[in-house]
Image 1 (cartoon, rainbow over the protein chains, first blue to last red):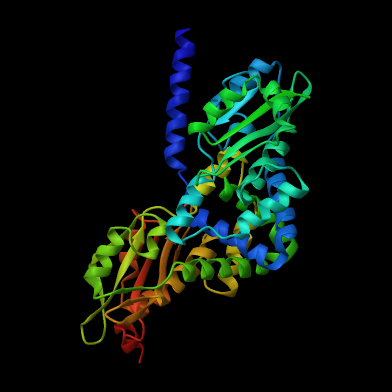
Image 2: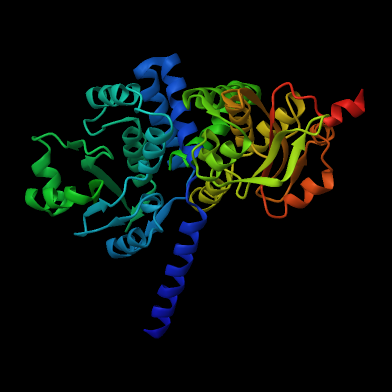
Length: 217
Length: 209
């Protein structure tokens, strides 16, 4: 037990050091947004949507695959930030199948953009509308497309007891306060999979960024 | 996360558009970023250097910038026409570390883009992202006036993630700065550049004449 505590303490220290070392640079974040806008200028909303989805899938495929014996082992890795699904975000798991992302990993970029450049370009919302209409209704801006596509592609790289992991978006709260909840006809099914009620969802939405669920295929 | 995704894209983009294509993309991003940040005007060097220290200039997006006011750049008449500035941390290092811990390694195209930039444009890049932010700095300088004079930016020296360095000896000669001084700055800083009033008659240029 003492050994486990020491191990956990060392792990927390390493995680904290790593977090300090890798705080993103605003120039890189904002430049990435402008690069996406440049793509949109040339390829329009449809082309940009394809580009973003391909970018996110390619990122997930470049990361190592994972396998776990049990769902509990997988949840341990997820909670510790060791899984591909929690590499880029801080999460907690109110149930074994519900995941709450506390801060959107793209928030810093959005804040820096609005601080340094001004109002977020309309194209980011237009492309999200295209995604909602043609792929899946869950995006508020272009970063949601990257994030949700990445998460789905990342889940495909995980096996728990030999079975694939699936994940589904329940709700997103944008940095500007805009909310996007799964369509009414999907919501009861998703809440049941996540093991939370509608009231609990509203409670999580108060001060978190994204609510999603994970389940074995 | 967006920056890591961007890195994963470099390889793909370089394979499809060639490293030259990636460079053209990055130059456009650097230029567009600078131009969308707007213009700035300062009464003189002290007000510019204070604004820089307080994070009010466009250059602040790169992180903490230090104005090395112990070494002013003077023109042939001995008037101060510029200063040297330095970033403690390379803007791309946090992304490289995050790629290291999430994906594994930085794509080979990163160095391929830097090498092509060094061969075809200027020998000052240590990684692909130098292309964006060196262009960004040049464009920002054009958008800033100090005592009604637009500025010009000279990339002097930089140190990459794995310790490799680039020192622009031609610019140092032009500005009349000893390369050893700049080399010693790289012990504590990752990226060193000079901002000089455009059109100033520099000491190094007079020596050349």
